[in-house]
Image 1 (cartoon, protein in one colour):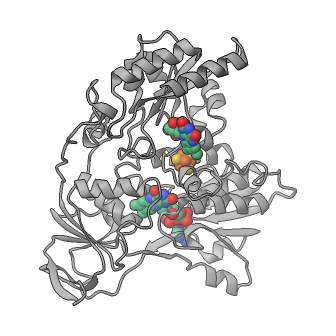
Image 2 (cartoon, rainbow, N blue to C red):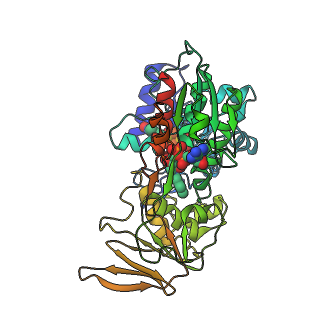
Image 3 (cartoon, helix red, strand yellow):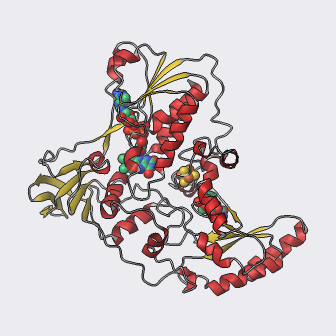
Length: 480
Ligand SMILES: Cc1cc2nc3c(=O)[nH]c(=O)nc-3n(C[C@H](O)[C@H](O)[C@H](O)COP(=O)(O)OP(=O)(O)OC[C@H]3O[C@@H](n4cnc5c(N)ncnc54)[C@H](O)[C@@H]3O)c2cc1C
Ligand SMILES: Cc1cc2nc3c(=O)[nH]c(=O)nc-3n(C[C@H](O)[C@H](O)[C@H](O)COP(=O)(O)O)c2cc1C
Ligand code: SF4
């Protein structure tokens, strides 16, 4: 306590009385042996007395085993902590964490939970957030989806922080968009993340862009991602891009599968046709129990009570979370109880001794061929959360398997050093064993001597990589 108080006191001495000095106070440590609420209040009072102008709220430490900013944290989930401090000190209080729309900020202020709200990632996602909100153009805000994929994950990998939904973040002087010298007629095939990003930036530069989308709606795989519990923020990404295309006058043709023949009339062709699920060669893949992840997540098919998932990459993990929590809505109380956060002025660090045990909706087996750690490819700052969620929901993770067959009894796997055969007696088997680039238009166009640009999953079928798809779309649009 002496250390922060001395810093505030000496800083105030150095900057004089009129300089705004904001102190971020950890109001809820979320680590064992953290401060009690009485100690937090004691420190707040001492910091005020030492000369702070405003106190901002810190929630948790990187070491905390409670997710505090990930996408599974409901919006505005921690403003109650700041509210608890109201009345204890006389200086203004700022609240924080997952406040990513003007409406959420407004609601928190209207309830009186805090005097101000702060935003970190939402301003990486859209540096014009405040301007747009003030001008009543909230529908144009690029919303932070709380993925951490390009901001915090990059920081922990010693890479430059940027933003999945805004590739210009921290690239403002390198990724620039000049008015096009010649306005070209450009066809974009595919309205997933890559096609949406390219079409918006290219049309804003003055090109005449037509976007062909075979489905009845824009979004591609993001329409599946948004069905996963904790990934609902992708709805905002699609709302944002839809509005941008409208403002930039992109000619959007839904329900239109572009053919090589009609594309030939354009000056430039961008193929953003994405990916299709890979079909592994396992006997019985045509059994009625087998469901593809697009069929499951889109609601075209329903899984039974016992389910095996083939493939434990990002999509396998998402499907497992979908299966155990299908239909659950983000709710602050449910989230806090699931992670053992104490809402009362109780134990040290704000942690309950026993978090609420979830009642999983199904029995789920998550299998992978590799014998490395399950979920090794997941994000640095979020992978542990997904692993913990599945563990709490009693998902059985089985690594190092080979798949023998699928039949009426279930999924037959071989595991262990001896390759012992075992049947997972399940009602449904979900195939999440990777993806293949969809490139059927490349050959007919190339053989007609027409050059094409490939972006996103059509260029490289990596798993959860909207970050790469959006950046590649933007980079191509900057130079085309
Ligand atoms: C469950 C799930 C969760 C995910 N979660 C994340 C995540 O958290 N983070 C992340 O970074 N990524 C995530 N992803 C991956 C992300 O959605 C993809 O990386 C991204 O959507 C790829 O974008 P794309 O534009 O290349 O392709 P797609 O999204 O596959 O879009 C391609 C589009 O092209 C259309 N199309 C194809 N052929 C034609 C044609 N001939 N004419 C017209 N239209 C055509 C298709 O209908 C489709 O809409 C997730 C994916 C899934 C399935
Ligand atoms: C790239 C990055 C760096 C951050 N660095 C700090 C930091 O140095 N000190 C700190 O108190 N919080 C830091 N934070 C946390 C933010 O201040 C903020 O509390 C948190 O991201 C939750 O708010 P948000 O949902 O508005 O992003 C950082 C966040 C990001 C994304
Ligand atoms: S990378 Fe994801 S979490 Fe980070 S600012 Fe962008 S949208 Fe938000």
